[in-house]
Each structure stands twice: as structure tokens, then as C-alpha cells.
Image 1 (cartoon, rainbow, N blue to C red):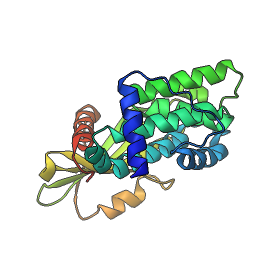
Image 2: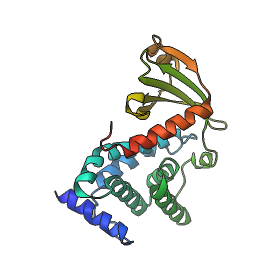
Image 3: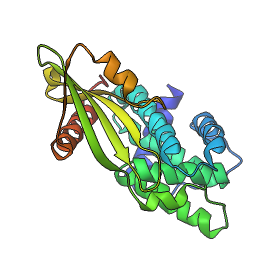
Length: 236
């Protein structure tokens, strides 16, 4: 239970406004995660498109959420937030181009306190002269949802959605989302479609009713479904 005790102490310090100043030479509970994240994002520093880096850090946050949600209920703290804060703090101390890139990507895909902490740490690193990734300017233009295709099962229990996002001057990106109406519209799964585009997804859904739908309506459905997933006691 050493990790649980550490997470409980960190949560208590956060609530009290404690300013953590751990030594950069002292490995934290999250150092292995941070090291893997920086190693994975380093080959993406020269990519003009931030999407691969955003997807990478989003996956890390998702894994952290799924693995700590039950633990947080057990030890009485927001374990997901503790993990996110720990990763941000480690990246801030690392002060390297991969760490800076990870902070920028976290600031783009995370929400609330995590995004604010990540962006504040990235600003401090930039003032210290840490080099930005090639894709940093593209963050000024958020991706726009430009197309949505829905595949509905015969019983209407689940909708599969293929969402297309566009960023000015960059390649379109596609994300598949599963909405479970049996769970109140909760987003049960979401993942990026690979470089083959929508073709393989459409082939996989060929036996279902497929229609193109209004992106403004779909956006609300997905946002609500993600909020339900965040509030779900144990990750679906």
C-alpha cells in the first residue's frame, strides 16, 4: 500500500495548497511513466502536426484514469488527478524538449487543473529557452469537427461514430467512438483510426445502418457521453 499512502498524502497536500518542490534528482512515483512518455514523444518533435503527440498523451491519461479510478475510491482521493499532477510535475522538472512537448500536448488535450498546470509549466520552460516542437504553432488553430458518420446496430443499443477533424493546412484525422445507449449514452470506447482513413471502419460496419449526421448534434452527444464516462464508478 506504499503507492496508495503516497497518493493519499499528495492529494491532501494539493487540497491544502501545498507547493511541491521535490528534488529533480529524486525519482517520483510517476518517473517510469514520464520517462516512457518522453521517449515516445521525442520522435514526434519534428512532425508539423500535433495530432500524433496529442493522441499519445491522451492515451497516457486514459490509461492512468482506468488504472486508478477504483484505487481512488478505495483510498479516498481523486487518484486520476494525483497521477496527472505527478506526471506534469515530473515533466516540469525534466526541462527538456521532449518534456516541453509533452506539457504542450497535455495542455491541449487535458481539462481543468491539469491543462492549466501543464501550460504554466510549459511557459516557464519556454522562458528558460527550451526548444519547442515543430508542431507548436499549429496548436493555435484547434481542430474542427467537419464530418460525422453513424453506424447503428439493429436494436438501437449502440451507435458507432466515425468523426473527421480538420486543422488548417494539415491532414484530416479520424476518430471512432462507441456510444452505449444501454448505459445512458455513455462513450464506451474511443480510438484514432489509422492512416488508412475511413475505409476499414466503413467495411467493418457494412452490415449496419450507416448515415451521415449533423456534426453539431453529434458533438453534444459525444461530449455528454464522455462526461458520463468520467463519472462512471469503474471505467467501462
